[in-house]
Length: 536
Image (cartoon, rainbow, N blue to C red; front, side, top):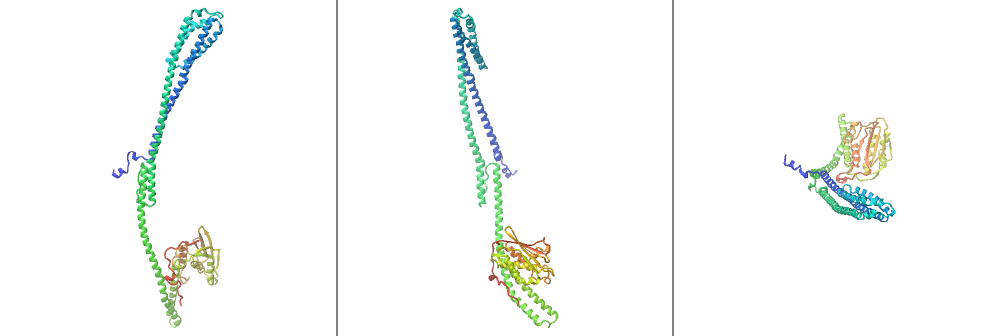
């Protein structure tokens, strides 16, 4: 195993993730709280048990012992009064004392159950009571009423001694019950103090545990996440060279490491992007310079070609007029070829100039009523339309921000093509429509002419591309290429509708306002004449 692999695999507590720390912390906290809860429950139970024993057993047993003593006093008083007077009324407290003695003795037996010393004291009291009742109380109570009992006089000394033993037994019992009550009260007080200390300790432990959990979360989660957030914000604000600190549990360190790797890749991509941007800027500057030179060359070349081309055309036409029929047929044919070539060359130069001016010379954008532009176009083509019998219908067209000259060239080329490429002997029918599609307007120019085969749907928009020879249809093959350039200059697209088969349907889109013009735009005065001079 390499050193890097060893470093990449942390051991011990450093390998614990946030979830593992949380699980262990929660388990330990629950175990500690459970132990504290059990201790608290035991202390509460012990306190309640001692309190119940003190109130329900010790104190009640002592009170019952006092009531037993009172019952015995009632018996002794009643028996002694009956023995001295023979009055049966004195037997009432005696009999009531016997009933109370029986109830109190049974209550003490129940209360002292499980207390051998207390039961022994109770038996001693019962033995003393039984001795006194057998020797004194019952015999005297059984004597006839009405006269004093001789037995009371005879056994007066013995009765006093027996009842003193009863009192002594009761006093001993009460002293031990009082001592038991004092010990129980001391145990209860001690247990209550222990309970208070235990609950104070539980409260302190809970506070300490809460502080420990808070500090652990701060150090293990919030501080690392806060530092990670600071580093990420710094990187997002442009400090791409700032490293991401890896702190906290293993998963947070791993997350920080992955973010740092992403930052490093971002730095690399930015370096590549910056280099590409510099290269692109250089190429753009070179392309702008090249385009400027090509535009200047096109204007200069076309302007300089006008003069020699006019001379060639003029003199070939003069030769044709002056020597027509004087030379042989070959000479007349050659002269015709020269005149036709010069005229077509001049048409191509003028068309090329018009094509190069799109987006460069005419860019005076303003609100244009396309319906009026179409009417002007139809007016300019009125002779051709009348000769061919063409029927042109046009929907209501919108007003858009565009260059009016280019819009005129666009409609003239589209409607002109629809008229020119008609079927032989057929009066063409042309329809112009417009429909709004979101931020754009879609226009269509539909005719019932010869149509365009699907395989040529894109080729027809390439400059100087012709689908027919000049003998069949005249023209330079630049019309649809110019339409495409005008539409794209105004932020739209143009295409042949492949689903329409009864002729040709050209569809194009225009925005309500064209995109802003970027780059240098030459004007006609700087680059050359706006229009070529007419051929003589």
